[in-house]
Image 1 (cartoon, helix red, strand yellow):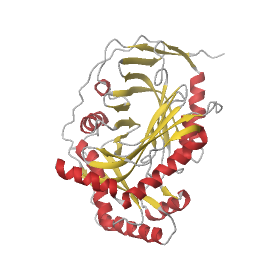
Image 2: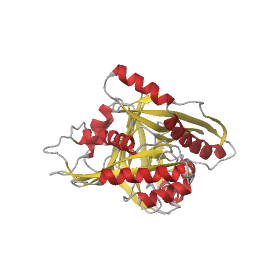
Image 3: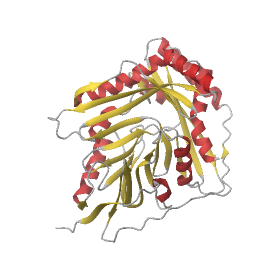
Image 4: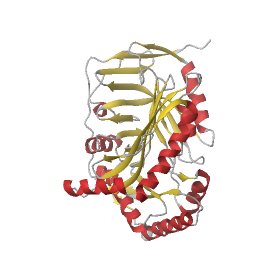
Length: 406
């Protein structure tokens, strides 16, 4: 019988700033308002792809768990060994799974550390990563704006002809730096500017998403749906008026309803009860405002083997990042979009040994490759969409990453 690998989780005596703990060795993070998980080093990693990638991911994670001898004096969601995952949007691209060597977590008044191996508890050191000469030069996308607006016009025409109800179209920009681009600095800037979002980093994908796809904790499931966006002006009085107009906008409410319904329908088979608020609220971020709805549910006790992977397989992709009906929206994306989304708009976050976890949709993010980064933005297109306004909305969604890179 093979020797099991020790995994130890113990309380920390002090609450350290999570993002300041990250070294430059394969940092991973999932942090909101100072709470969450960070990790570094790689115990094991793999990639999965194809239509069964969530099942393959579960199988790999369960195989890894079988090799562990876990000692956990903290208990609770997010303690013990943790899988960080960044799933692709489509079947064609690779998803990345990573088990960090060291994990530090914080929730409310509790902080803990988990490490894998026979060594003593790792020393924790606060770091302050800095970048020199990190001015980003963006590729010249001449004609890209016009081409994207033409794609929006095509999508609106198909929708008005009854081919589908909604489609989400994405665009990207690639930038280059003289030096390798440092994810830790980007994370800290995003966390400071957008504290109500979930700042994340997994295998070079770094960002701050406002959209929680799935939180599963002890049979309770939550999904925050965002759809319908308006850009802020910086003038408080004007922005309050804009928030009120967003809440009344028939175009944005239509887009939002499709997204909420797709999530509620995906969760319903697993839950004895679900709560879907009748109307959305307006979520205020530093640069934009979104229509938001928190869908919650209680998992049926008789469904003993339902875990985060099971629900993800049904939730992704929701109408918030693909469209509705799914088949027609997906086909239109393949026809119109000239980019590969990679792991943009896919689930990203963590899953623990019990199958609980928190995963958002990888939005407001960029994929780092040494000294280059590709950033993404997408917009939901419905019958009342205007190409010029959708372009402006996409530009607003680029702002967090552009700002964090400067």
